[in-house]
Image 1: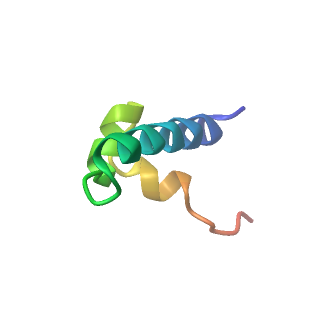
Image 2: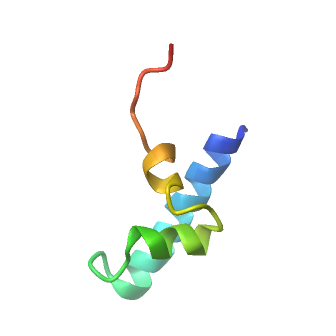
Image 3: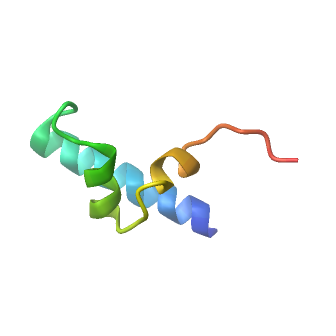
Length: 53
């Protein structure tokens, strides 16, 4: 696994846990990032569907 894949997995796991505990509307990206232990900009970067050249 690489850093992006690791961060993505951590973000997804954190999101699942927070959604279960607080619901979708009660779980901000900042809270998800904090729970996952990543920077606040990581959720948009790690889930980006950009083409890599």
